[in-house]
Length: 308
Image 1 (tube, rainbow, N blue to C red):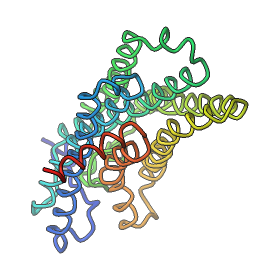
Image 2 (cartoon, helix red, strand yellow):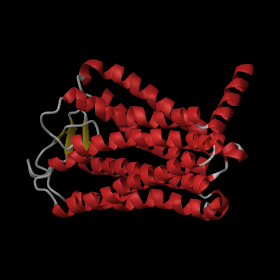
Image 3 (cartoon, helix red, strand yellow):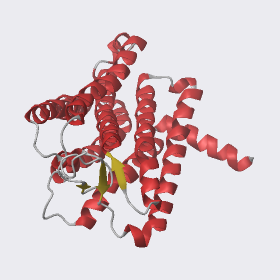
Image 4 (tube, rainbow, N blue to C red):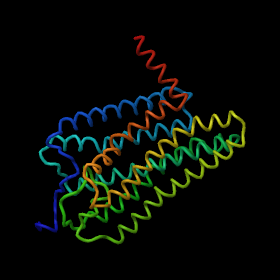
């Protein structure tokens, strides 16, 4: 093993005063993780249990929430272990695996949001064709593609990175995202080109497609009667809020994380935490509060719990 060019373990240096606040960090993150699991699984179970929620829109919501659970489960156990450890380290192979899960599941979220936007577009703009277009087969294809396509595309840079030499052993972050590219001795042109292609394919193009569909919905709703406008507002607003939230976090990851200098460590730490703390908990709260049918079943659930 070479001393400099073959680093086995990577030090995660993104934590701020972890020795001083480790138990506070652990308590906050453990509490949030439990809340993420409870909130997301509660809504998924409600969708599964009630037949009036067995519609494409709610199926996609359940898939999105399960994706959030998978994302959190891929990140939190390692973060919690690091907080209780004297050294925050990760092996290079584990770092690559964490990188794969982080971007594969993030890409899946964009594609699931695209599927939801298409579902709303067909429902509002082509209501008579909705049962024909949004069949079970169509939904299944969308779900499979949403998880399979990002996984396949993310595996390529992981494979390309597996045999690359590392010259640096300190990562300015709390988990492995695209900033670990800066640890390599030399940059890979093939990896960079494919990274841009993957970003366009599962990031920018779905984002533009979502904007296009909601713009069309807005135009048609404005030209229609009050009931159509009300339906569009009730069903599309939660999706838009989730899209804006997730897009901001993705923009941070793509632009800011790659800036290794002249960026305060504390701000970097806080912004990085948003991806694992705030967003997975934001999804079920938004859909639980803003989606009328889900909110109605949640109120019944909690009213029954109070009676018991």
